[in-house]
Image (cartoon, rainbow, N blue to C red; front, top):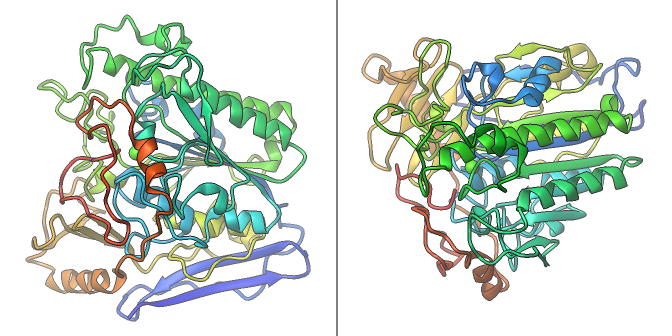
Length: 525
Ligand SMILES: [Ca+2]
């Protein structure tokens, strides 16, 4: 039986600082949890509640940063975040596809407990379910989101403006987000027309990412004197690749002799340009923080949303044109990719910068995942932490045990499920069941990061322990609700010429969410 254990306390002396560490522990777990001390940090060490900027870049792979040695992709500003902050080597996605991963990030739950576990793209979290934004809003933060939501389409219980966001601008449904030239975007469930777009998915007069970026920029400036949470789940480099001809990042890549793509032979070049575009815009946000004097008052997080995919793979590039899961220095490749639960589906870039509070240039091997985001941000904000979560705050890992007032707690285990696939991680051990009734596989990730040597035969007791944890971690889905099916369908009726799906929404009932068949690539990335 799952026993949630939450350690929360309020350090009244400071008046503001609440530290929360949500811990899910099982009696069967062999690892022990370092217990948090009852007292908070001393006031002298306690940093002020920061503004929070959180980038989530759709599809950006673990090795798709120039600081990771990528030979083609150029990311100087993201590299700067790594140089000025901490880079995590095994902070893992909540799932290996967009929507459930974002649900984990937003709600602090793993996919055995989330209300959204498939990647249909419209499915909602439940009304009243706590999110990062609702928690931060409760602590006085103004919350803005700009990009792709993915936790509930319009006309459902999952819309961001009922989950703590004062303003959310961009795409709600993930199918809507397949085009960078939509005829409209959405702001707090209202349609915002984009001038000159005709429905061509890859061309138009108004490039959505420019508009989304500008709205984010405006929000930051408007709220510079308040404590803010700026959530930036940006869509590039994912989707039906298209970019304005005069974009400076496209100018860098348009003449590369690359003929590779899913829709057109330009796709790989556009993908590279989009990574550069994201980096450029990250740089502009960092510059804006500096110009507004907010650099030291703002903690910046940067993550990919799921593991890299083998886009534009061919005979010469079997791991994908940009090989997002291949270490350029060693040639080692994380097994699998987006869509499954091997490391290739779960490893994402994860960087955190807070000048003056986080030591620059550090590498952390702390094992964590997206459910940890909610309790971490709650602690940073001095907010009350919801009890029904699976995450553990990583504030001690970020700021150090002295500033946090306690050592970093560790997960007793981590859990993922996706369309009949299951994975459990406990320390170095990872058990994977790649299909519903397939036998478990067991890997020692300390020795076998590429998940090649199945150790089930030699370690049956470990398999049994992790399988028992998986059984206990899974609860039936309690889905959100659809209030207006026509509205849900409307945002999914976008021109799509892709292997990902057709023009219109599937009229699946939220009461019985369909789970995707195991092992397939993404249905609605
Ligand atoms: Ca994604």
